[in-house]
Each structure stands twice: as structure tokens, then as C-alpha cells.
Amino acid sequence: MYGTDGRREEEIAELSEGFRKQTMKVLKMQLSSIAVINWIAYGGTVAAVIIAILAYRRGDLALFGLLFIFMLAPEFFIPMRTLTAQFHVAMTGVAAAENMMNFLQKEEEKSLGEEEYPKGSPIHVKNLVYHYQDGTKALDGLNLSLDAGKLTAIVGHSGCGKSTFASLLSGEMQVGVKQIFVGDTDIRSLKAGEITKHILRITHDGHIFSGTVKENLLMGNPEATEEMMIDALEKVSMWKFLQEKDGLDTLLLSQGKNVSGGQAQRLSLARALLHNAEIYIFDEANSNVDIESEEIILSVIYELAKTKTVVYISHRLPSIRKADKIYVMEKGRVVQAGKHESLYAEEGLYQRMYKEQEELENFQKGGSHEAK
Image (tube, rainbow, N blue to C red):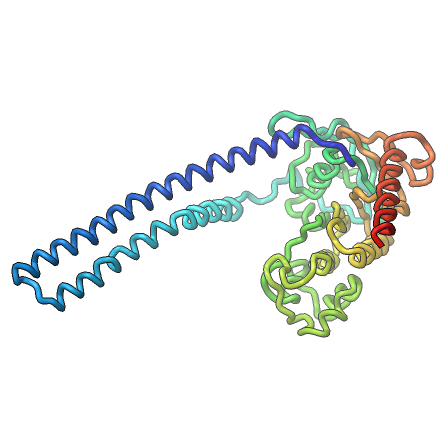
């Protein structure tokens, strides 16, 4: 529906092929080592049995000793074979450990100044350009403004640069000098840690850690009281559900495997609310969730926009109709801007995308009625 990004397809295909080749190399090495160990094990067992039989025939070994060797010889090589079988697991662990060490040794966020974050200020993006490592241009002179205490929506086809902009604004990727301003302050001149403290990005896969609900929420704000946590959980309609279990002490599995996807996303949203950032970026935060959770998340987003600067990135255009301003992106730049009514009234990308979604939803509704 949204078109196919050929460049992304090529990147994924290239990465997949590289992963396949590396995996086959490891498996080839593993199978080769297993074959060698098996030859040693079976050969050693046969040799031990032959030597034992010869010793028994010469009278150097009693019958009990012969039987003991028969039973012991195969067992002797089991630890060696088990160790070899775990080779692939060990190599996977080494790779994971390298990633963890690289993360732990990562340099602290760099800044070019000692400015404090100017709270309550709008964000101005001026001619923002960004290239991927392969040289492909992701953002091509992006210009937009995010007003404080307003809900700004950003829409566009996949690959137009929406999430790239979100990553740059939230500090996940480095932006150039004099391209993003908080009020009159260049974002690169802020003190280290100011961006991650005041600008928070929420994606569709907010991670839930193994532990209690309380432990997960404290990651958003270590100083949060139980009253603050309960208030945040009530806002995302999760407190009633948790009260039927163990409340804040309810245990969660890693990635929220013991709750639904919508509930896990709402818990992640409650944690974000406790962080109390100045700017919230919802990057497809309500995709892949049930209808009930989507409505709850949307309600929280619109309520939050009354006091915070909220950026809402979504493919579902009906959900952004009430936004204070909508930016339509294409090929790394803004091609339309305004409210829903004006954008829908004029011929352009927004109108085409909206009508495509209306047609698809009507088709799905028609199909569901026929099925009934």
C-alpha cells in the first residue's frame, strides 16, 4: 500500500546473505569438529575394547575388569562430544558478549557546549541533511517547527525519513551543527545528557525487562514514588489489571511475554510518562497493538500534548486528524504542511494516502460483513 523502498530491500537482502554465509561457516566448522571428535571417540572406544580383550586372553585382566572397560570406554568420551556440540552456542555467546562490551565501553554523549536545555521552547529544524553510511541521502533539506505544548504529526510513505528524523532529534544519531535548534539554542551546544533527559522517543517495541512492574517503571524515573507509578498506570488503564495480580510487585517476563502486546506497550508508555520529558516522540508507538490499547495510547498522546511538546509519527492517518499541525514528508523533505482539513481538501500526497487508507478500510469492512 505504501510502496516499496528498493534501497531498503537491497540492504536487507545483502545483510541476510551475509548472515547466511557467516552462519554456514560456523556450522561447517562445527560439523567438521564434531566429525573429528566422533572419529576420536569411536576409535578410542574400539581401541580400548580390543586392548582389553587381548589383555583378558593373556590372563592380564579379569572378567570383571573387561566388563568394566566395556561400559566405561563409551562414557569416557561423552564430555568431549558434549563440549563440541556446544561450540555453536558458545560462539553465539561470544558474539553477544562483544556487543555488550562495545555498548558498555561506548563513549559518553558528546556535546559542543555547556548550555542548559531551554524548557518550554519550540524546536526549529533548518535545512537538515543526513546521509546513511553508504552515502544515500535520508534527509534532504528538512525544514519544520515543533511548537511547545502542541501535537505535531509527521506522516509519509515508508522510507521518507520520518524515523531518521526522530532518531536525530532524540540524540540516537548525531546531527550536524546549526540544523536543529531548541528555541535559539543549537541542540549540539547543549550539555552532555541534556538531550536524552528532555527528549524521549517511544517506539512500537518498548522493551519490558525481566522483573517486577515497579522495577520496570523505576527505569523511567528512579525517584518515582508508588503514588506516581500508580497514577501513570491509571493513565494507561493498566492499574485495574495489575490490582487483580500483585500490583506493583507483579512479575514480568523479558519482553513482556506474560502479558499481551498492547499491555506491554502501555507499561512502556507508563514508564515514559514517569520520565517527565519536555518532548515526547511517538514513533509508530501504537502499531501492532489491539484496538483497545490503540485507543488508550491515542488518548494519552492527546492528553499529554496539552502540557508537553508531542511529535506523533504514524502510518494510520485517521489517528492524526486532530493534530495541531501535520507535516507530510517525501524523499527526505516536507512537501505539505497544515491541518487535516486543509491538507485533505487540496490535491497532493496527503489526500492520496488518506483516500487509499479509506478504500482499504472500507474493503476490509466489506469483507468482514460478507464473512458474517
